[in-house]
Length: 113
Image (cartoon, rainbow, N blue to C red; front, side, top):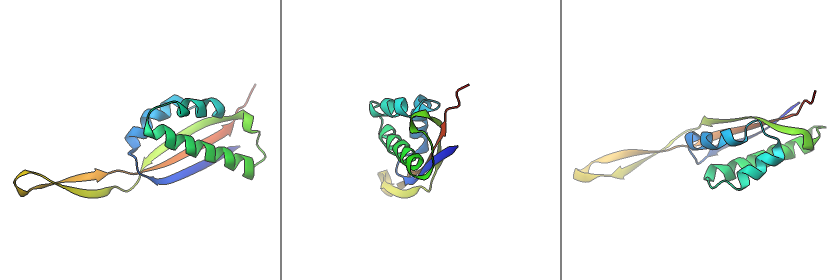
């Protein structure tokens, strides 16, 4: 059975989140949280919170053994961008895109054969 947690409109670009996703995808939840805790990236802290939220969803909403949960997939999609302007030389302006992300964490029970 799968359990998911979604965080929308997170103020970090999806490209930065993708760099951290590869380190924890496919790992057991407990070791994935430990890996994220000691990574220096901002995205690691955000992902740790979302993984913990998915574990809480599994604990409250379904009869799943939390010790057997594995991080099956993490998806970081692009959300809407905030458009800002920065003054440049000769009275010009350049556009700055402040990107946002929609991050989805999917956990599933490990199937031991």
